[in-house]
Image 1 (spheres, rainbow, N blue to C red):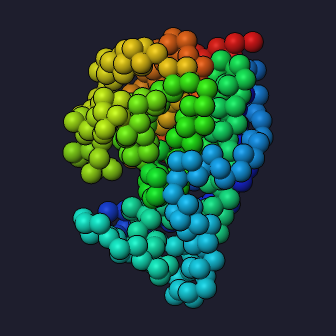
Image 2 (spheres, rainbow, N blue to C red):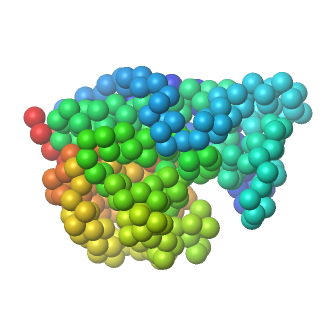
Image 3 (tube, protein in one colour):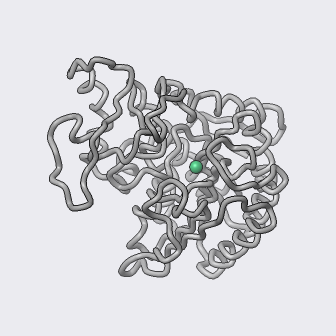
Length: 343
Ligand SMILES: [Zn+2]
């Protein structure tokens, strides 16, 4: 299986993030996550690690707002130009009200406008790392379009919380959405998000479209991030109505209950009969994840991969979250090993 990976992610390494209550903690979405996964993949004979190609900005601008992307591109330089007291990382502290806000012009105004929480910290290398991450997803999509049974985009930073014009949840560019939208030139696409958190950005991007079916299985936003979106009654808008599904789960969900929910999602995908499948593969459903509350085992993650692979669809697997670094390598191997490379 082709694995698309770029070292550029190392340039995005914020020194800390801010948790609820104002607690500063080391950045959980860290480069070590990738090292653990790479080490595991280098130990198997079916993984071929490849550099991504550069697709330019057009496929990214096809799902993201240009002014938002311009903000990501210049935010770091503007931050330093503003001579902040502690320049370590750009984190805004003021956010828009629940009404259509005026688009601000100041750096901190735009940062609050374009960033939904305190986890999407911007440092010098954030924008190039986010572009390289999107190129990994696009390269995996291209490999699948050219006939590979499945390809894995080892993306960092992750993407599924990034909406059309906002960053959040460690995400800046929605890699899975960029790949899915790119694939629509060749047929209908289903996006299945199995990350522990609701794929709010992917939901936003495709909410009014009927050529991309989006399904997210995740911890109920009633108690979990992203709190304001990801509820079962959100099913799409306009012609997109019925083409989005959220399947929220309670705390403590184990393998058996998870797999029952997955089967519902897989049935919907079969009915939609897409040409391609994009999987937002978050490993924070794992029982020991520091950010998770559901209890899927490594064996359960393997079974999730097996059932998704059994759809027999050309599949682009995109790395999302997963913060139990010790277990990331074996969990990714368990998930991927079921996708035959078709050669
Ligand atoms: Zn997550």
